Structures are given as C-alpha cells and as structure tokens.
Image (cartoon, rainbow, N blue to C red; front, side):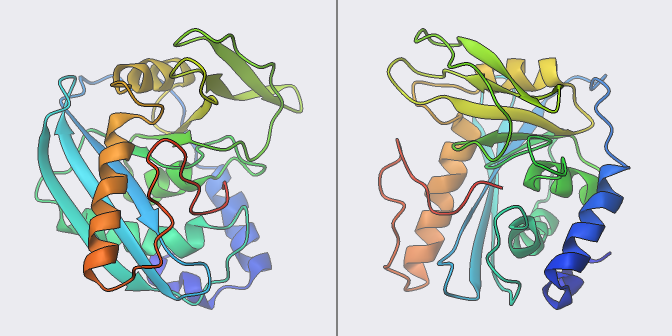
Length: 241
C-alpha cells in the first residue's frame, strides 16, 4: 500500500494492514558492513494536519554528518496510540526520497517490534522501504521489564507474552532508560550494539538527537512557534508507538 493512501484508512483498516506487515518482518542479522546510518524524527501538533519530518545522514561508526533531508506534509489520519506510523511514515518517505545517498541502516525515534502488533514506526518504515531499521524510543509502549542498573549501558530485556521484544537500556547515569527494538532486517543484538555506539554523551542516540534538532528548525522556520520540543534531555512531543 502506498503511504499516500494512509489518510483514507479507518483505524480498523490500519490495524489489519499492520497484521499484514507483521508477516513480512525479517529479524535475521544484517550481514553487510554499515558505512552510513540515518537518524529520523518527526514533529507535529496533534491538533494540526501538518507533519514535519527530518532525516540526518552520518558516516558510521564515526557519526559525522554527511547529509540531511526534510519534508513538510499534511495528513488527516487521526492521532491514535499504536497507529502513529500512519500519520508519520508518509512524511518520512517524502524526506527519504530526497536523500541522494540512502543509508545502510536507519534509526527512528519510536518502536520497532516493541509494539503490541510488532509494527512500530521503525518496522513499518523498514518494511515499506526495504531498509534495515532500528527503533529507539523514549517511552515504553508495551512489554514488561525489570529496571536496569544505573550504570551506563546496563540493560534489561522487555517481554510480551513470553517473547523478548526489546531492550531497556540505561544510556546515561541517573536518566530514564531508552527502549531499543529491531525494526526490520537487523537482529536484536545488533540493534543494541549499534545504539550503544550512537550514544555520545546524551540520553538520546546521536542520530535521533540530530534529527530532532533538524525538525525543530524546519518547524520554527515554517512559523510554528508552539513547539514543545525544547529540552533535548526529555522531550515527549508525541505518544509512544
């Protein structure tokens, strides 16, 4: 299904499509070297149809910025937890299509398989672009876990119905954990290792942090000053998904 058709779906149809996507998920280990990595973030006011998307491209493992792409899109799909990919993916695909170089792997601000139907935004985006993708979320959507220790990179598995669906990772001392899960074409272990390498002094992995700065910039330049994403250490501009 083309992302441009998402806004015409009912919630029931969107859920049915998630079940269809779920059957296509591939979590076998990525077997090629990663030389480029992309970070993606989205910003919107849930009462507005406007969606701001940004992708920052880095070399890897050094994480030097080598490119960016942005998109400003509109959607009528409602703001529903668990279905936010249907609001966000169309704008992200617009930005993706503008990249002159497509990264070897994407890190997205949100869930991969740590989702009740295993189809968070990283899984959704990875499947429709056929790109290895990892979800790194600030909030838990589903799954249970024991609180990880308070040392950097302490971690705890997240379970849902006996299945490990993600890892709660303490990326920084005295900060809430982040929630890592593979999206598509990458394993759980690889996802955690890659995100660990992307932690550069902040709670949030550097690819997502830089993408967050980028979407803030285009949102302000577009005249939307009702932007709550000011504190980079604790921004929660949308529901977990």
